[in-house]
Amino acid sequence: MCDKKKLNGIKNIVFVCTGNTCRSPMAEALMKKLLKDNNIDTINVISRGLSAFENSPASENSIKAIKKYNIDLTSHRAKSLSPDELKYYDLILTMSSNHKNIIISAFPDVKDKIFTVYEFSFNKNADISDPFGGNIEIYEKCLDEIYKCIEEIVKKQIII
Image (cartoon, rainbow, N blue to C red; front, side, top):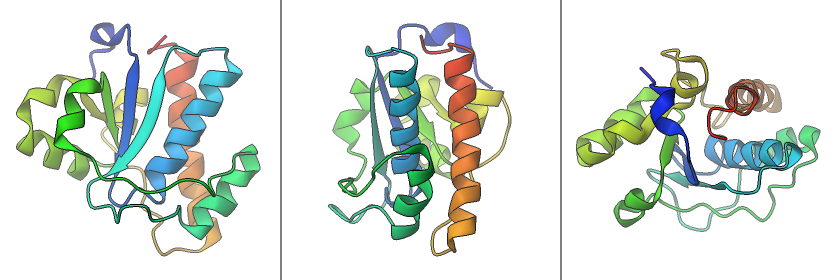
């Protein structure tokens, strides 16, 4: 599980999901908002996908759901996770254990800095539900899961 003591001094975080159009962009945007709301400007946050269609917009329901936090995702464009980028991230947070396992099996040297979002926030073995193709209620439920985890990370000041 997560050894939070090793994670002080985090400067660069990447959230990873499959297509970088639903979960990871919502996580990126929420983390940026919560960091800003807590006057933390020393952490760079981005998102990527394992199988992203480059430059695809955020899904329509992601854009609609996240508006409840006064966040606009209309300018988001999907990007794939680049192997060359991995060395720059201090913390890699995946939406599922499958995402985590895929990355570790291809790049075992990142195993000490990769966690699922639930693992890092609550030390819990769980995945963020995938809303892809679902209705707005499914996206809102997913967004609430992500928010709860990110709020816990910031609240505990794990990365501050």
